[in-house]
Length: 346
Image (cartoon, rainbow, N blue to C red; front, side, top):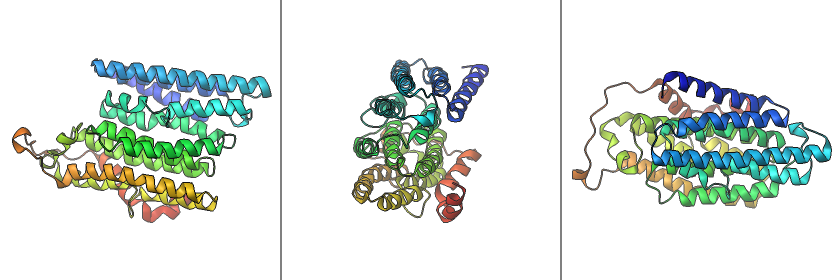
């Protein structure tokens, strides 16, 4: 793909995201979502591999259906109330349809089936875009409409997402699929808190984006698509491998790393809202995610391949690590001590 085309698609993604997050009118938000979908499709299918074409087709069908539901929800609300303002969503049917539409866009259970397949058919950089930037407009819409949505539906989806994201990630051998199920699990944490404290859900999303970007860019720099490849990368970039171990543990939410901050605040807020049972369940289900992060970390740093003859050792990489990877991994590990400042800003 030539640089001019890449620039056009990057600008279109920026335009679509900005349009959705800054609009008050449903039609403008819908337009931004459509621009985003159309801009990412060529990036998914650029390798011309059958799996990439399949991923692009699945992504297009799911996103088109979700966008149609967003439009249908807003038109139903406008029909009954005369309001096109995003924050004035009050009709119960519209609220239900919008919850389904945004769950499809985000990949929340039970509308999650497309996400691991699409991520598996994409490159690591496009996978990073799908896991972070493409989730920002739907999360913003969820944030704006959160007072109107039913907490019970969101809580059910959230607990199911955390459970299935952890469970289905256990037996995966492809790093992109593991990160897809990790994303589904993290979305569960955002969905459970958005009805009670929308700002906390956004903080969770920002920190999740930070840590996921660090993991994706680290895996991209060592070209690790499978666990078996990850086992031999210690010869190529030993320092990056060691940092990747800590970043994965941060993504799992272990203290004293950055990933512990959103989980701690969410459990605290749920307890204050007197839904301690849901807080206990989601905290226990996050142990499933911890297991497959530990498995990734174990493969990356602690174990050697079982059959050394089948795995060619990689040459030591003398090139310096990308500055972006260095900054993101540092932030993924070090932000917990300055959490009072972060909370004051948010």
